[in-house]
Image (cartoon, rainbow, N blue to C red; front, side):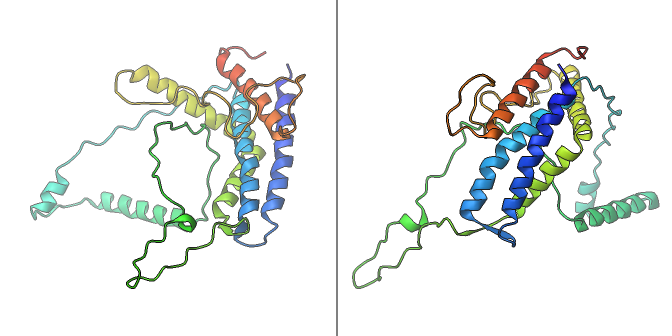
Amino acid sequence: MDWFAAIEEKRQALKRLLAMLVAMAAMSGGPTLPRHLHCAILRLLRPAEAAARRLIIVAARGIVVALPPQRKQKPKTAEPLLRGLGIAIVVPRADLARAAAARRAAAIRAARPRTICLPLLDPLPRPFRHRCRHVPAHAAPRISVPGVAEPFSLPPPPSAYDPIDAARLSLRLEALGRALDDLPAQAKRFARWKARRDAAAREKPASGRFWRISPLRTGRPPGGRLSRYDPVATHPRNIREIDEILAHVHALALFVLDSPRSDTS
């Protein structure tokens, strides 16, 4: 199988979809989007992000990275206790210089424009998440006492043209574009995550910590409408192009994760 050709084909398909989503997000020309347009972009962006994650896994096939040595943790001191007792603490000049440099670096990071990276791991389903039961504002009961409290008017139900903040959506589109433009760097990033996971599983098997065994969640991919890839099957009319792309790269990612590292055919 020509892995490079398969990766490049799916990458170009995702870039075409991303260009369409960026054009849809630019239709309003402002920091907000109508609710119907915001939801339409999200319905395509979620499976596109899932497909890009699986494409990164396929691109990381055969990449081996060496992790840097772990930093030794400094032993805890009684400095907070001494300060609470009113005892003066003499801080070396070198420590003061390092603290000042750390503050300057934090200020520089805070001044930079906000960016996000494409997550390498699928969000896990939370079946036991407690959801607060509430009544929408437009359907709340109007309780009043005759002669004491007058009935108040309820707000209207949400409209398809309500303005929704698009800042987070723009960051996700930008992160997806950067990942597709620099797929080798993202593949090395995934290889480093996999190496850290393997090292944690070997060195700390009984530490009580939890870590992800697989970057993909079980079942259907996030946002997809196909549970498996079948190139000769007849799909319903509600199956989109992104669903077929996601199903294909999902099958490739599962094959890569299940294959031994030495296999480079």
